[in-house]
Structures are given as structure tokens and as C-alpha cells.
Amino acid sequence: MTDKPRDHHLGVVLRTERLTPHMIRVVLGGDGLRDFATRGLTDHYVKLVFPHEGVDYPTPFSVKQVRETMPREVWPRLRTYTVRAWDPETLELTIDFVHHGDKGLAGPWAAGAVPGDAIMMLGPGGDYAPDPQAAWHLLVGDESALPAIAASVEALPEGVPAHVFVEVDGPRDELKLGASADVQISWLYRNDRPLGDALVEAVSALAFPGGDVHAFVHGEAGFVKRLRRHLRVERGVPMERLSISGYWRAGVDDEAWRAVKKDWNRQVEAEEAAALG
Image 1 (cartoon, one colour):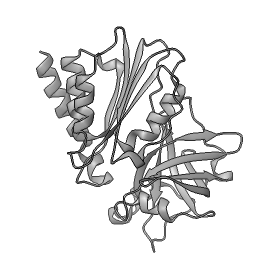
Image 2: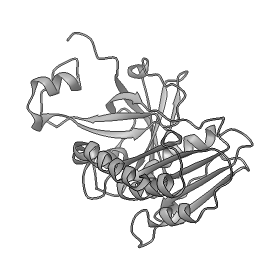
Image 3: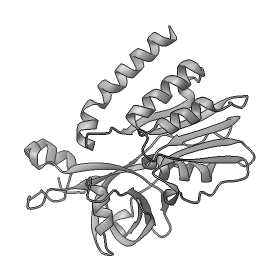
Image 4: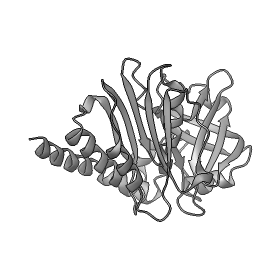
């Protein structure tokens, strides 16, 4: 392999900002992003590449080539993060990281990032943007979904109602979202309750407006599963009007979740089909 794969991009840290006690913004730039391109979606994501220290990887670097030619134990770790913003004129890519101390891989990296640090990424992927023809919108998620929800709120059509529910640890984790008067934003505080309980309760209690809804529901897989059943079985929302997925699963890392996610989704679909008859 003589050329870098087209979906591999190298970003250089330009600046960082602590948005809340648990959210860090990192702005990347540099000529390594010159081939980066988005498609107008609000859930665009990249897979950040974290190589193992001390391993001599082939150059030019390719995740696919590494996986085909090197032992699994040295494969780079991948972490999926939403593109909060992309400016093709300045080549600036903004990513917001949830940070809970030393837990995880990408959060600690973001906390220690300084201008000049470089990171490889794959992508972008994505498949959601608010449908301008929908009668109303529903956006639901925890901190992991907040960057996509924030980008989606900014893209909502003017004059179309939307209900936004975001669960965070507490009031200091709220972010100012660029919403119009037609958007009702509810910040739900987790406190000591199980993750996602407040979201399930709030959506279940919502008096749905009339007309076609377009919904975005993402975050920890456990509460996403509960809300998917509620929306599909109890509310009758067609699957094609839902962007819904578990971004992560409590108690497992990203690799372990990716390894079982397809089976998890198949089980959820089977249970849903049985409930719908």
C-alpha cells in the first residue's frame, strides 16, 4: 500500500475548551483534514484511532492492513465520536468528549490534549438529519448523544415544534443549545437514579403532538431498548421515522459492545416483532 486510505484523516489539535465539568471540546485542524467531507447530516461521526504504544505499525497507516497482517492484541483501539461541527473553509473539526476522570480511553486523551497533538480518525459516517417535512421532532439522549442533539437542534426547521430531552448528572452539565422558540428543551438530572430512568419516564409521560414525528433516540443501550419498545409498540411510531441505537453499553468498553451489538439488536427486533404481533 503506497497511499493513505481516503477514509483515514489526521487531525492536529488546535485548541481545547472545558464546556462543562464532564464535557471537553477539542478542535482539530491541519492539512490532514483536507479530504474530510460531510453530507449535511447532524449525526456524522468519526472513529478515533488509538494505537498501542511501542508497536511498529506499517506506513502509510491503514487500520484494515493492520488487521489483516498483525496480531489482534496490537490492533489499534477505535472510539466513535460525533462530529459536532465541521468548517470546510478553515478545515476545523470540532468534537465534544464526555469526560469522567481516568475512565475510558478517549476522554482522558481529550483532557490531556494540547495544541500540536495529532490523532488519526476514520470516516465520517452518519445517517440522520431532521426531516424538514415532519410535523414535529423528538430528540432524546444522554451525554453521549448531546453533541448530535445539539447539532440537530441547530438544524431544526423554523416554526416546527420539537421536544428535546437530555439526561445529565446535574445542572452544571447543561449546555446552551441554539434552539428557536418552537423547541422545548428538558434537562433531566440523573442524581442517584439508574441511568436513563428519567428519560424513559419523561418520554412516556409526553403528550404527543398530532402528525408525523421524526425521532432521534441515542445513548446507553439499556434505556434506548426501553424507549424503542415504548415508541414502536405503545406509540406506534414506524421504524422508518426513528433514528435509534445504543451508542454504548454500561459495564463494557467500546470493543466489547461492538462485538455483541448486532446480536443485541437482533434480539431487540425479535422481541419487538413479537409484541407487535
